[in-house]
Image (cartoon, rainbow, N blue to C red; front, side):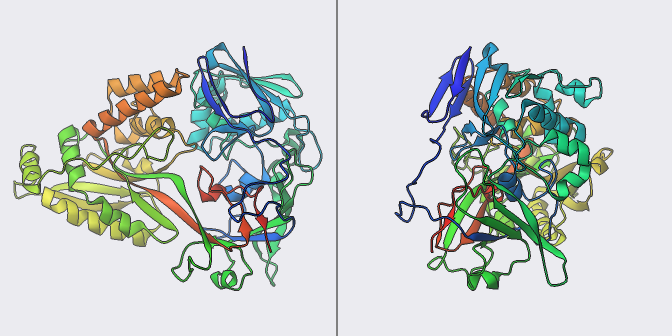
Length: 538
C-alpha cells in the first residue's frame, strides 16, 4: 500500500503500477508571483463576467447543462486538475493507492464543509457519484459507471448501490475500479463530479438547485434581475468557510446580458474576445484550448467508405484551413488538426502535414474504386446535428465544392438526433463535434472508434481488432509512458485506416481589464475558469 498527497508536500510521480502526477501548492500562501510583479494580492471587489453564450442559463446542477464557470466556483469535487493537467486535491486531503491501482482510498479534509456549515462526509461523496448513474442524462456518466466495480449493474437497475463505492467512516471512502488506468482519477476531477449534500438534495429534490449549497470557493448569493425583475444572471459571494485559502474577490456576477459597451466603460471586467474593437494594447487577452474536437466521420460499413484507401484519399481532398477559417471568430479560433489526438494533451505534439498527393494521382486512385471517372456522381448524405443553421450551410457549401471533383454528390441532412441515421443505407458522412469530459486521449478514442462503444457500434460502424486490443491494454496499465506509446500506435493506425477526417480543435479567447490579476487559463478551457486566485488591483 502506498500513500499519495499531504498538504505542503512537493510535486511527485508515483510509479508502482499506477503513475499519477500530483502537484499541490502549500495552503495559506500569503503571496503569489504575479504577472504585474506585485507581492500582496488585494482583497475585495466584484468581478463581472459576460458569458460566451447569448442566452441565459439558470441550470445550477453540476450534472446538468449549466455554465461550467459557475460549477467550477460554486462546487467542489474530490479532486481538481492543475494547470499542467495533473491531479491535485479538492475535498480529498490525500489518497492511498492499492491493489495495483484498482483500489483507491480517499481521506476527506477535516475542514471541508458545505456553504451551510455542514461537514462534507463520505456518505455525501457516495450519494453524489451514485446520483450521476441514476440520472443517465449524459453518455459520460455511463463511461464513468463502467469503470467502477458494480457501477454498470447499478446503472442497469440491477443493484441498489454501487458496490465499488465503500464508506469506511465519515471522512474516508474507498473506490474500487475495474481497471488500473492512470486516467481513473480524471473523472473525479471533472465538472460534473462535484460533491453535493446528500440530505438536502434528497429532501428538496429539484428545488435544491434554485438556491444550491456546494463546498466551492464561492457560494450562491442571488439571481441578478433587471428593472422588470426578470432574471438576467447569477451572483456568487466569497465562501468564508472554504477549507483552503479564501478567495480574494468578494464576489462574482455572471450574465450573458452584460454589454460589450459596459466592458469599454469599465463596468464589466471579463468578456469573450468577440470583437476587433477590443484593443490588445488596452486590454489583456487570455487564451486557452477547449476540449472540443471536430471530425468528419465516415459510415465505415457502407461501400465505398468501407475501403480505407477511399477514406484516406477523400481526407486529402478536404482543405481544412478553409473550413477552419469558416468556423473561426475572434473568441473561437479553429486550429487545423492533422492528428486524431489533439496536440495539447500531455505527451503529444502536432504531427507535420503528410506528403500531399497530386489531385491527378488522387483521381486515379479513386477511379480504381469507381469514383470520379464514371460521369456519375456518388450520392453521399452529410449529417449535421448542430443548431447553427447559417454556419452549417456555409460549411456544407464548401464541403460540397471540395468533394465534387472526387465524384461525391453531397446532400445536406439536418437532424435533431443521431438516431435518425440508424436505417440509412446511403453512404454518409457525419459532421461530429466531440467534447472530451476530461483531458485524456481515452475519452476521445474509446467512444468514437472502439468497436463496441455505443456511438461507433450504432452510427459509425468502424472495427479494427488491433485498435480494440490497444485501447483495452491502455485501460489496464498504470505506466504513463506505456499509455503514450499505445496512443501513438493507435494514432498511426487511425491515420492509415482513416475512419474519420480530423478537422480542427478550438482555442477560446477572453479579454479582461488590465487590473484583473492572476487569471490562469484552465486545462478544460475558459468555460471552466476558476477564480479563487484572481483579484482586482485598483
